[in-house]
Image 1 (tube, helix red, strand yellow):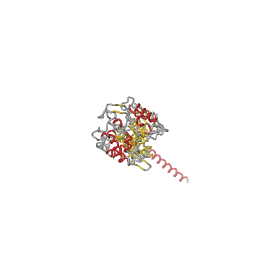
Image 2 (image 1 turned 120 degrees about the vertical axis):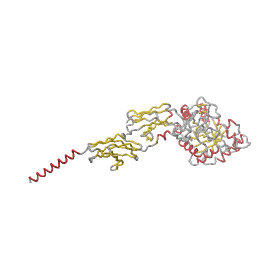
Image 3 (image 1 turned 30 degrees about the vertical axis):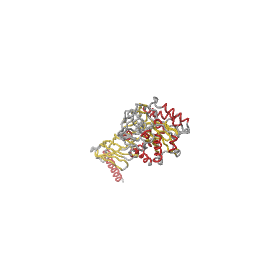
Image 4 (image 1 turned 45 degrees about the horizontal axis):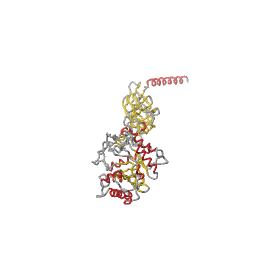
Length: 511
C-alpha cells in the first residue's frame, strides 16, 4: 500500500512539472488596432492593425472575423491593412493573430454600418430644371445650382391652402431669345421642368402664350401632353400682347384677334382635363393687352363664351369688365422692391372679396441683358426681396382668409431676371470646425434665408451619412452620441424654398 501511494505521488509530481514547463513556454500575443477609431460608418470600414508575440518564431498571419467562425480576410505576417465592404448592420468584429508557436491573440472591434444617405456631389450639383451648363449672369440670375426643395407653401401663413402656379416663358431655343442651354419645346425639358415645379410645391403652370401662329406653340402642346401624366397638375394660358401683334387672324383688328385667340384656347386647350378651371369655367389670363389696345371686353365675351373665368392684371383688374379676379405682377421701376405695387394690389383685393385674387412671389427684376431692356433693376437683396413678397401676402391673408392662388413671377424669364428656375442666391457661406467633441459652424450672410441645417459625416469626402437635422439659429452640435470613425463633417445650410443650399467646407475629425 505504501509502495502504491509513493508511485502515485511520483506520477503527480512528474505531471505537474511537465504542465509547468508547457505553461511557462506558451507564447503571449497582442493585437493593436489603429483603425477604425470609431464605430459608425456609412459603407466600407478601413482596418489597420499590427501584432506582437513572445513566440520566438514570430507571427504567422492575421485575419478579421465579422461573426463567430466567419473569417472574411487573412494576410500573412504581423501587419494588416485592408478595407471591408460590409452590409448595413451592427458587428462585433474580431482582429486576430496566429503565431508560429500554435498560439493566438485577438481584439474585438465594434462596428455599425449605416447606408450612406447621399453623396457630396448630389448635395452640391444642379438639382433644378435649369441646364447644367447655365452659369451665373450679370443680371444676377444664379447659375445652375443646388436649391432648396422645401415646399414654397412653408413661406405662407400657417394653414395655407393656396394653389401655387409658375408663369413660364415658352421660347428658349428660339433664335429671337437668349440661349440658356435648353429648348423649351423639348418634351424631356418640359418633363424636367414639371418635375422640378412639383418638387417645390407648384401645382400648375401659366404659359405666356403668343398664339398658334408663333413657333413657341410647340411648347404649349408639350406641356399639355406632359401634364397628362401628372395627376392634379394644371396648365393655363396667359394671352400675351405679343399674340395680338402676331395675329393668326389675317386682316383682323385687335378686337377680332382677341376673339379669335380666345376661341382657339377654348377649342384646343380648355377641353383638356389638365386645363385649369374656376368653378368649372376655364381660367384665362392676359398680359399687357389693355395697356396696348383698346378693347370692348363685353363684346369679346359675347363673341366667345360667358363661361370663362378671366383673370386680369394688377389692382385695376378687380373692377375690369367681365372679370373673375386679378393677379399681381411686379413693378419693374419701383424703388422699394415693388412693395408699393403689392400694397396697392392687396388693398384692392380686400375691397373686392367677391373676386379671385392672385398673389405674387418674385426675387427681383433686371432687364439689362434683354434685347428690349430699359435697364430696369429691382434688386434681389440676397433673397430678401423674395421673402418680402411672402411677408406682404401674410400681412393680408391667413387660415381664415385664404389667398386662392400664388403666381411665381416667373419660373424662367432669364431675360428680365425674374426666373426662379435656377434658384435664388442668398449670398451666404458656412464654415465648420471641430473643438473636442463639439462641431461648431459659423454663418456669414442673411441667416433668415436658411430653413434648417443638416450635419453629414463622410469617411472619404464623397459619401455622406446624415447625422442630424437642426433648426436655424443652432450653430453647434455635440458629437459624443455619434461614435464616428476618422473622416470629415459637413454642415449644409438648407435654404428657404427655392433659395440656394450652401455646403460648408469639410471639418476633419481630430481622431
